Amino acid sequence: MLDRITPPEVRPFGHLSLPPMKRIVLDNGIILNVYDHSFQDVSELMLLTPGGMVEAMGSPVASMLVPVMLDGSRMYPGSALSDVFDFNGAKISPSVSDHFTGVSIRMLNSHWEKLLPVYADMIFSPELDSHAVDTCRHRMAQSAAIAMQRVEYKAQKTVRELAYGADHPKAVMDTPQSVEAVSREDFLRWHDCIFSRNLSGAELFLSGRVTPPMIDGINRIFGSVAVDTDSDTSPHILPFDTVAPSFRFIESPGALQSAIRFAIPSIPRTHPDYIMLRCAVVALGGYFGSRLMSNIREDKGYTYGIQAGLLGSPEGTVMLVQTSADNAYAEAVVNEIRAEIERLYSGDFTDEEMERLRQYLMSTLAQHLDTAFSISACHVTERISFTGSEYFARQVDVISSMTPDALCNVARRHLPLDKEIVVIAGSKV
Image 1 (tube, rainbow, N blue to C red):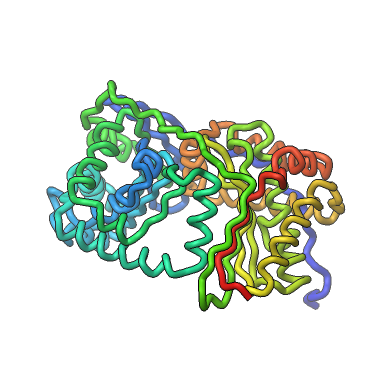
Image 2 (cartoon, rainbow, N blue to C red; image 1 turned 120 degrees about the vertical axis):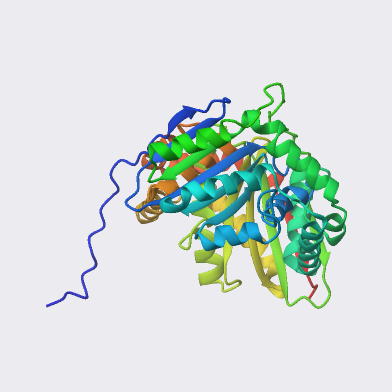
């Protein structure tokens, strides 16, 4: 008889390790990183180039460029470009981080010979015509206008300005005015910067079922592109100008809920304590069984959800707690957040909580090893976050060895409540 009462046995993970990618130097010096491992004839290629939101000084052009590039290229003008990708079952995905811009194509291996030149033409010879620019600009301006009415936008904008500095590119959020101010000339200049002048610092990431003809084809197309080796592609690292401690209340008449942001400036991602601190923040509010969820959602019933995370970058890190609650409970929620951070200082972790936390963190790492694509994405993350190739292994070591004392010690050192930044956007009760 089927046993529906006894739960399945839970076993600890074995040793997790991130497989390396093979590095190939193309004819022009661009690095091609290859991970060949797939049971299906599918592959993904990403071009990652230096230059992101910070280098664009927060201009919306950084996030607008690739969507407009999809609206036509020299060989495939207008909708003909997207038609080729759609007809052949390919997917184009843009990504923009603080200091990098990426464009990936996921495709069936049976179509790579046709799609690779089209992908390259989109990247290096986009039309960027006025109609496509106007359409994207109008769509994003409309979205920004709607977002600005929400208390979440108001709270997020203010907490960024206080944590990073009002003039820092990471503090900038889109407005209809900033979007409408982007001209076609801005698109042309940014495209020239990212996909021409910065190519000497670019890397390609190829994963899935990889064949020698694919590598040869990539070298033939991407290895023949001119590269300016004299161009400076180093990231533009701007120190934060944090205003802490600080408190801001943003009156929003008629708001049914308050958006709450609770931030503490902390150590950069390259600091030796960063991984252990991240584990402590996960315990605080990084998963469904976290302390903030158990207290503020399940016990008190103040909110449907609350999250805490580390926003890490070379410039520094901000621990950010985000939630929304009834206006009448906003102050109580902030007090409970403080209380839970103070609890972290005490190190009162039970064996059950430590095991649950360890299993969650290890499960998250294991997810990165599921497919060739996720493994490649993990390598990309190490590149754009400047953490180095040993970061995954260091995470495994820290999670395996973490103790209540280690968690409470990093919380005491790197989450000081005398540096708290509290922002509430809502309606006064």
